[in-house]
Length: 112
Image (cartoon, rainbow, N blue to C red; front, side):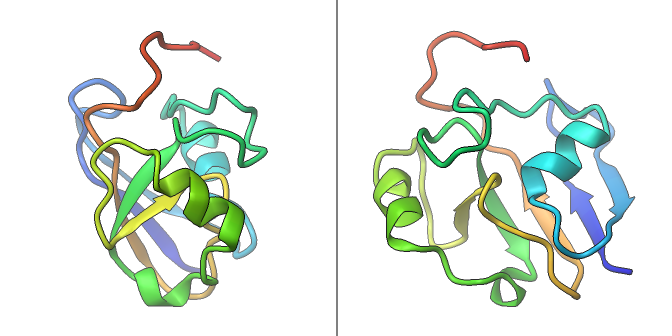
């Protein structure tokens, strides 16, 4: 079973987290199931950029981003080559290390 490591984030998971995950779940679903309240203003429908994350290890194990996700990533704050939308990045069979950016383009937290 693959592990997802969420690096420490001052606001969402100060201690970080290591989670055993069944393949097939999105990173957003994994984070939320562990109490990591990652923004997801569009309810995980790939219609915003608030769940943007960096995949620091294991990026190549993910399916490639489709054109819609790529279009939204173009609008995200602080995008780098390791960026994905966590609602679209589905865990496969390899461990992942995920960093949550400090900011999103969402000016107000939705507090789901």
